[in-house]
View 1 (cartoon, one colour):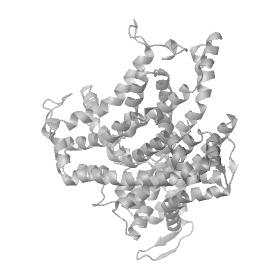
View 2 (view 1 turned 180 degrees about the horizontal axis):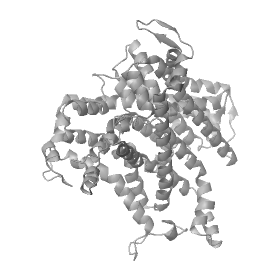
View 3 (view 1 turned 180 degrees about the vertical axis):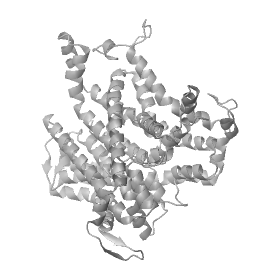
View 4 (view 1 turned 90 degrees about the vertical axis):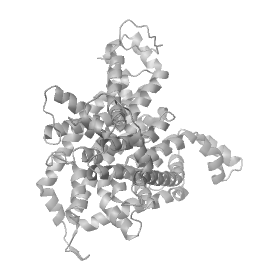
Length: 284
Length: 290
């Protein structure tokens, strides 16, 4: 396998190697496996439905942007994106706002029940949304919040608040405590210290936590679909309904899929060094 | 880091506590409530005791779903963990190509789960999908909507595609944190590549691998959206995992009692696994002196 050709010291890669390394070949194959399905979706989205069903082709013969045009001009489609972004942003802001002080408390202090509370948060991150779908539906219906953005935003705090607390705590415990103490000696009040000194220090942590809150809320379907009908219907739900209802327009469906990948693809480069840390709840 | 004992820290945690209590405890209490009561409609409930639990525990439908779920999670872990480690070992250590690998490999992780389902639903079709078409041309009568084995293959391959990068990224992060001195010492000792892996890299990756296993187990244990889009739990109930079955029961048939009892047992399993993980992780942290 890969092991035979690895060297231990850091090496400078030269591209004039006489033979292809096994490790490189494995990596290239794996990345191809990652990209081919995404390429196929892109390929589909650039074809008309007739072309898709008419014959098999590895790339679009007459590339067309019509499918994207359909989505961007039809309110029932593009409102799906607007709804999704609305509740995702609400959820991200809400999650970060409550998670920041809590993560600070966990990273700096011992207090009654802190370990239990921290564990309890983890169990909520791990809780299956399927368990909560029905009770959420009834809860938000009974308080008149069914089919509103705030309902989905609140429901997603179930897993995003714990996620944000754990990630932020992971970043905060890397900040030396002496900084806090110095600031207090210099006469900073806690809120002023937190906003003026501490938050800039963990800016990258806040960014990573925001990114992951955004992502996990963006990719979730079960809860957002259960809690909405028409007014706050997310794009994911619009897509599944179109599949079952209108005779499968593969081109438009693919275009809708490609558009949902864009937000993640845009920011991924900036958080590339923190992806592992974020997914691992700040524990790496 | 030494922490200061200060119970006033509770005020900082209070907002989280209230919010999560609202979005987790209240719904969970509803579930507990339903699990011990029965109704004939009109919001009239009467005490049922542990009847639903007995029914669910002896239900062959739930046993089937649990069996499929455990099999699925086991297959996923058996494929993704070794593959993820292997990929991480292949990645360049730093520089431009490392960034390129990170970005390209992360892409599947950021795709909405229903779109992941859509991608593989299309890809697996024999008329328009690359995978299905290729298999068809090779003379394999491929039909994931009819054949349970094919349905399983496509769901497993989809999950490998979707989540292996997570394991690879975590393992890679673990590898990055190993100081060069360890490798140099191994070189002086003329340790073989396998020994370096077995006695240096693997122990040093212990912590991240534990997290990878936990996350992959948990997320595969509650998988819903992707198989729901691709196979809808079928053919028959061949790919109805726990969440799919539960949603069918709770929102499809509105069997509140059994669904609630089912939910509680589901949740207890999750709780147990999380607790084991949390304990092991805290012990590792202590051993490393964090």
